[in-house]
Length: 171
Image (cartoon, rainbow, N blue to C red; front, side, top):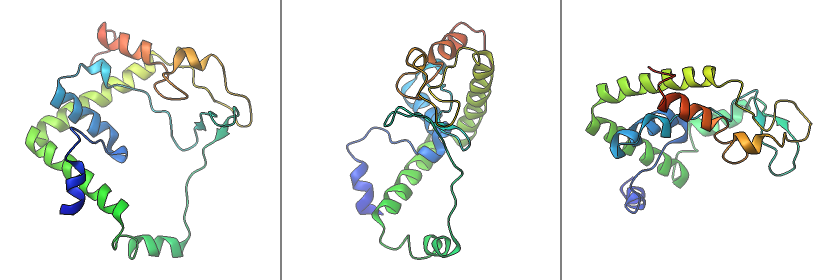
């Protein structure tokens, strides 16, 4: 793990995708970002849609599954000498250490507040969030370009940022 940890030295911060909400809150606390800069709507959820960037067509995201033999391999042999897993473990450990440094209670309270802000902002902005895809096997909605940063990332960002910045949404 020490060898892998040295790969992190050039970086100021590394987020963990599976812990994105926590990562965003920690980044906010470390760098003093305002709430509206870290609250975003989720773009990839099971049952949602791929953004169609590669093909121009929308595709429903299927729930992932694995077979029993794959589950056994992942639980046992996968972790042995797997550098990807070691990098992931080091990133998680780094995030946990940073949370300890900032104070777990502080981060947990800020995380609860962040989640409330996101939920309220998404509810308030539901009409202005125009994702590229809402139906399977249809072309991408061209109006999504006005609503999203890129593809299906940050859809509804202007409304979400303004609703928090202006105090329309509060936690």
